[in-house]
Image 1 (cartoon, rainbow, N blue to C red):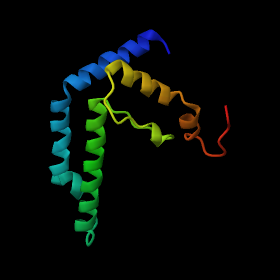
Image 2: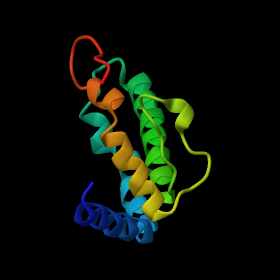
Image 3: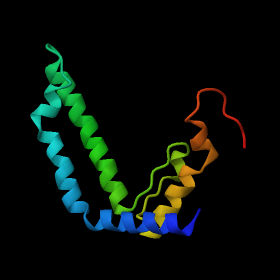
Image 4: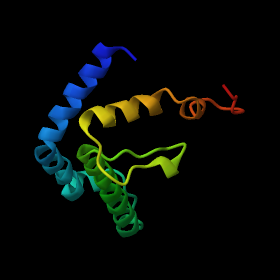
Length: 116
């Protein structure tokens, strides 16, 4: 992968990590914004839908927080998920590896997995 692209990714990730507390504060406000909940709910199922949405939102926020802390999760190979935070360069490297992994790329297409 080109060094300009990699360097741009590293700079962007470094800025995101440095601003992680502010970013998380902004994202957490959506948990408590009633307008976000009301727009998705139907009459009669309001409470159950709201509870499930909140659980999903908390899970997503936790995933975002972990990524900003340097942890990497793998979709196609969950056993490779890191249990320790990576450096900015290490996280960028792993994310580029995931983005170019044929197993991950093959999941974008309907049909049979072709071995590359």
